[in-house]
Length: 252
Ligand SMILES: NC(=O)c1ccc[n+]([C@@H]2O[C@H](COP(=O)([O-])OP(=O)(O)OC[C@H]3O[C@@H](n4cnc5c(N)ncnc54)[C@H](O)[C@@H]3O)[C@@H](O)[C@H]2O)c1
Image (cartoon, rainbow, N blue to C red; front, side, top):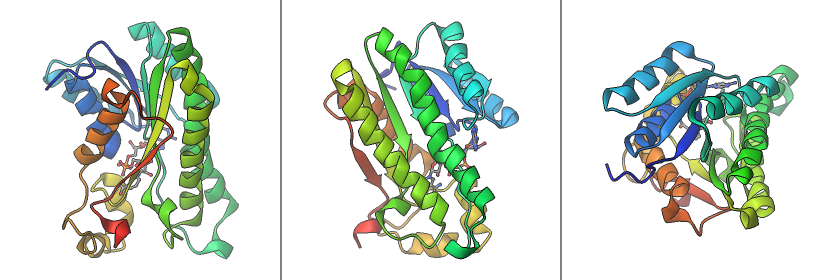
């Protein structure tokens, strides 16, 4: 690896699985110290162990991103353990298929908003003051290609992810002049426990893959490489942007 993140400290929410694990591993391999923040302790510790296997430095901090006190604790725990915070990667998310509008329960709406949009908001809210103190930082959020069209998959999910795109642009406009860049990625179908749970259960994962022009689902590593670019100094002039990464699916 090229050490693109040597000396950096990153938080990756949702780092116990899928895209978050892939990102944690790549960031660790590129020299960043990594805080894996997730509700899944067992799988989170596994991500930490995998990073340790190639000599990387990582720690797990149990965090429910929808809970303000826990997100504050995640940021403070990072500062206590590693002394600073350079990169915040907001991957934690709930992706559950829901029935059409009239049958969406308020409970599901609240749950999705609390994790996907409030969780991203809280992490940014508590990380940014420390980034400002140390003169800058970078944030990468995760939206979804569900924001590119009307989505039959889930109304709360697609609305929450549209919120993530707007939050990204607004954080960028408020803090770019003070050294904080904020971007987001818009993945199409990615092969993860999360998407297999949703798509696979309905037997539609393979059908969805067949509609992707490059001929396969994305892998967590594909998304992690884009996150790496956006988090690294190579993207010093990139902020407020939303990058589609979907194997060509949404330009068909
Ligand atoms: N897989 C895809 O096809 C796809 C496509 C577009 C966007 N996304 C987005 O990418 C992100 C990761 O998806 P994935 O497919 O890797 O999912 P995944 O289910 O494999 O991983 C999600 C992780 O988030 C964690 N998490 C859930 N709720 C949490 C909470 N309240 N606090 C902290 N952690 C929590 C889970 O424990 C899990 O480790 C999500 O935001 C998802 O919406 C995924």
